[in-house]
Image (cartoon, rainbow, N blue to C red; front, top):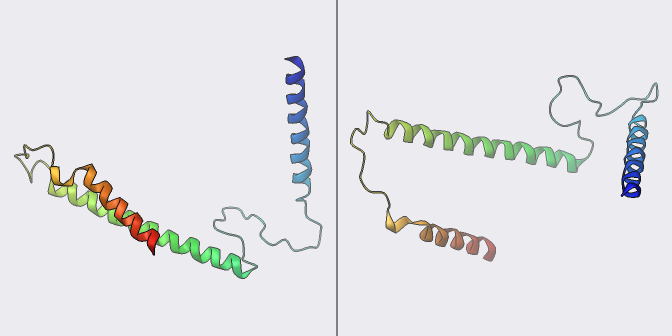
Amino acid sequence: MRLKTMITALGAAFSGLAATTAAKAQVTVEGLEVIGEPVDRGIGFQPQATELMQDLVWLDTLLLWIITAITVFVLGLLVYVIVRYNQRANPTPATFTHHTPIEPDHWQEVAREALRIALVN
C-alpha cells in the first residue's frame, strides 16, 4: 500500500513539473508578434489564420442563431401556455387526465419513423 501511494505521489509531482514546463514554453520572445494572445475582457475566437478555422467560426455562429431561434420559440410557447391556461382565463379546469390517442407509444412511433426517414436519406 505504501508503494502504491509513493508511486502516485511521484506521478503527481512529475505531471506538475511537466505542466510548469509547458507553461514556461508560452513565454514570448521579445520583439515577436503574438497572434491569438489572450486579451482582458475578450470574448470569442482568436483571429482565424486558415480557411478551415473561418468555416468553423461560421458554423459556430450559425449554430448560435439556430439555438437562439429554438430558445425564443420555446419561450413563446411557454408564455402562450401560461397566458392561455392561467386560472383567470380557465376558472374551471378540465377533468380528464389522459389523452389515449397521443400516449407515449404513439410518440415513439413518430420518433422511430423520423429516424428511419433520416437514415434512409
